[in-house]
Image (cartoon, rainbow, N blue to C red):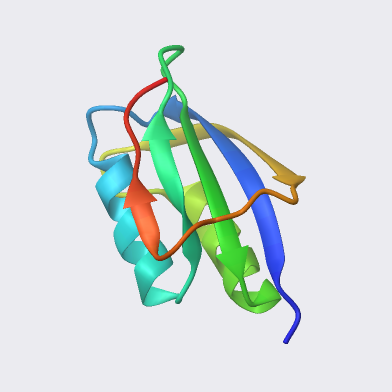
Length: 93
């Protein structure tokens, strides 16, 4: 089965609005591996790995975000990084 792995950077009002928790719940629902974390610059960064259609659906969901968020930018880059097991909330960097 083909696997797609991407790193996503999300900008806007994405901290203090449960964006990380929402991202983890959605990624788990879609069966994705990876992680999500806040960055000190106010953005959120995530790694998604799994079936290509599920990764693409997660990208679409990230453009909307949870109800209290306001996404103003989303950058997606393919990567070869190991996603690890399951989906994790990582500390801020």
